Image 1 (cartoon, rainbow, N blue to C red):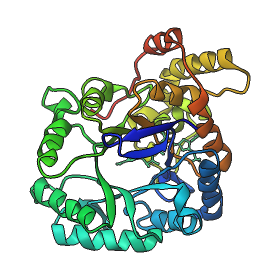
Image 2 (image 1 turned 90 degrees about the vertical axis):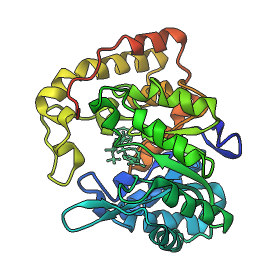
Image 3 (image 1 turned 135 degrees about the vertical axis):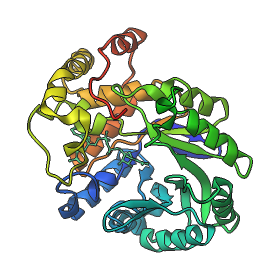
Length: 332
Ligand SMILES: NC(=O)c1ccc[n+]([C@@H]2O[C@H](COP(=O)([O-])OP(=O)(O)OC[C@H]3O[C@@H](n4cnc5c(N)ncnc54)[C@H](OP(=O)(O)O)[C@@H]3O)[C@@H](O)[C@H]2O)c1
């Protein structure tokens, strides 16, 4: 698989990563699929993916344990990215960016992952009660202690900029400028997909200009862009799509033209090519610093997604994607 470098060229990863979240969190049925999920991680590594994206809060904790089962056997094949800063409570998820907590959480992640170093340690969310410079300073000390190789910032839930009338990621860029004063940012993780292209406006170019890698979260539109979901099929209450405005039967039907467009492009590239692969190839075409992290717990899909690294979309294909209708249904 093609390799890409992030963090001013210091870190090398396979062009398509693997999002491990659906193996333990946010999708119904996640918790009962441990062995299948482990096979999916092996399948992705076998296909040349290296970046495994997890977080201590996925599960909580069980996703890191699962990834650790694989790392124990083949640490050298993987580039592990995990996250700190969110705690799952009985009712709510709360942020904790206190330096002492960050250091304890890192040690706990290392134990669960069965490794002595985390390749990319990401701040999952800013703690509004702790200056981000203090949190980031503690994370930088973890790099100096040799427990972490590089630092990243997640901006998946960023919506403040849009609400205040600015670009979606104005607040993210403000945060990045502040933490950059303390210690270099090697990667940013934010939503990017054919139906959520907002990061292209400013965040993606901002990262590219500074040699910062961009991890594209939810690159398959939480499964919608794969064309395997049927409008109105319904989701279990513990599935994030049960509350997602784009996953009502009405919005899934309204957004079908996007899937139809991806399917048309896939067919043009060969009978074996899938809409999911076109959606990933579109992300890969947005810059050499971009690494999609499609999530799955199925080996077959992990392998299929990894193979998207070899699919090259032409300028005409990219123009056709740009011409697809914008997504209906929004969190804003
Ligand atoms: N930092 C954050 O706050 C944050 C937030 C969200 C996501 N993320 C990261 O981004 C990663 C990806 O996001 P995501 O997993 O939520 O969304 P996604 O990658 O857009 O979509 C995942 C869904 O697509 C399905 N799928 C995957 N490949 C498929 C294929 N080839 N054909 C058909 N269906 C396929 C999966 O099904 P199965 O699961 O049944 O295999 C799953 O339901 C996560 O794993 C996580 O690492 C980070």
